[in-house]
Image 1 (cartoon, rainbow, N blue to C red):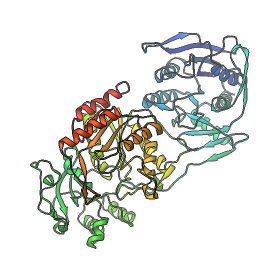
Image 2 (image 1 turned 180 degrees about the vertical axis):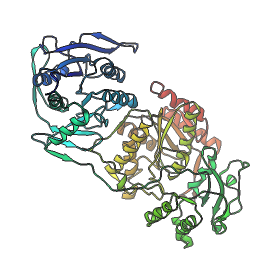
Image 3 (image 1 turned 90 degrees about the vertical axis):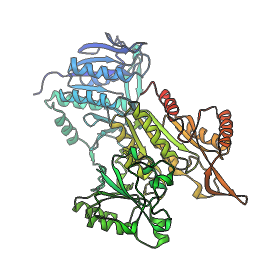
Image 4 (image 1 turned 30 degrees about the vertical axis):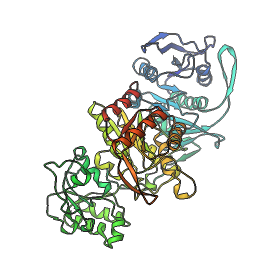
Length: 608
C-alpha cells in the first residue's frame, strides 16, 4: 500500500475561482512588476483558461492529491525567465511536492544553467518534474533536461505511449483531443502537448499513490508499461581530438591559411618555433613578418626548407596547412611523409589537409600517446536529433558574413573577440576556418577552402546547431560566428555559383546582429540584396559594414582575381558613397576596432 496522498504543484496560469477543485492547499501568483522586481502574492485567479484546463484534467483523474497552484501567466501565456525560475525555486524551497507539472516551457533560454540547476535541486529533493515540449517542434526547457520527464505528442501513436531512451524527449503520447474546463464555466476542446502531458502526470501520480516514489523507479515503471521503446541512434565509436595541448609547434607551408598564425601570434596558447616551406615558393630564408606586412619580434625566425627539417628540435606538434594543390604541382606526398616522421620522432600532428587513411594513422598516433587532429565533419557528427528538434540559442550571437572571399573576415573575428575579452566578457566562438581550433575557438565547422565537411543540407544545420548548443552550455556572454565567402550568389547561371553551405550556416547559427564585410568594387545593389537577405532569412540586423581596402587589378579590360591595396582617396570616396546609401557605420579593414566593438556592445547592451 502506498501513501494516502501526494503533493502536486501545477505551474501555469492559475485556476478559475469558481471551480471546486478538491484538496487545494495553496494558491499563489509569482509576477514581475514594471521595474523588474519579482513578487509573490496569495491567490491565483485564472483569466486565461490554460491553467484551469490543465488542473481540471489532472484532478479529475487524481482527486485525492494535495494541489498547489502557482500562477505565472497573468494576461497571456508569456512570462519572464526570472518569474519561471522563481516559481520553480518556490516549489523546491517551500512546497517540496512529489510532482511538479509544467504544461509549458522556454524555447530560447538566456539562463539555461540557472534553470537546469533549480530542476536538479528539485529532483535531488525527491520531486519528479513532468514538462511538455514546445508545440512547434523546437527543443524546449525544462522538458529537454536529462532529469526531467519530457513529453511530446505524435499523430502516429493511436493508443498507449512510447518510451524514448533519449536525453531530451522521454515519452511520446497520442495527440488526443481533450474536453476541459475553461474560465467562466465554459469547456474547451483541444489537443497538443500541453494537455496530453497531463496524461503522463496522471500515470505518475497513480503510480506514486500505489507506492512507486523514486524518479528512477517511476521511469522504470513508465518504460515497462510502454507500448514500444525507441533506442537512440548509436553511430559507433568515434575518436576525435579536442584538447590539443600544444606548447611548441612548427608550421608548413607558409601559405595564406597559415598567415594568421603569424599575424595573431599573441592570440595563440603555444609558441611557433620553426616555419617551413618548399623552395619553389621562393620564401625560404625570408622572415614571415615581412611577407604578411607586420613588424618582426624577438621570436621571429626565418622560413626554412621543408627538405631540412630538424626532427630532433624540441617541438611537440607539427602543423600542416593545405598541401593538396602543392602536392599535385610538385608531385610529392608531403602529408604521409610528415605523418610518418611525426610518429617516428614522437610529435603530434595537426593537419588542415585530410588524407584517405587518416583513421589508420589516428590509431598509430594514439598507440604512441600522440595526437592527430584533422578538422573533419562527417556523418558521425550528426547529432541524434529526435523528431528533428533543434535548439534555440538564448545567448547573444554576433555574425561576421561577407559578399565574397578574401575580405579579412577571420581577421575581423579575432579582433572582435579580443575587444570583448579585453572588456571582461566571456566569449564563445564557432569558426569556419580550419585554423580556428588553434586560436582556441570552441567549435570548428571547416567549410572553406579544401573543405573537410562531408555533410550538407539539413544534416549540416543539425551539426552546426549542436555545436552552438555545446558553446551555450559553457555559459559565455556572447557567441561570435563567422562564415566563408559570399552570402548570396551574384547570379544563378551555373550550379557552382549556388552557395548552399552559407545558407545553411546562416540558418543554423541564427545571429542576432551581423557585421557584413564588403569590397570597394561591390555593386551597391548586390550589397543591398545581401543585407536584405540576411535580415529576412533570420531575425537579425546588419549593424555595420567592414570594407576590405583592396581593389581588383584590371589587365586588358579583364578583371582578374589579383587584389592590390587601394589608395586612401578611393577608399574614402567609396565609403562615403556606401555610407550615404546604406545609412550604416562603415569601417575599413581592421581599423577602429574599438569603435566597431563598442557598436556591437551597445547593440547587445540589454542582453550581455
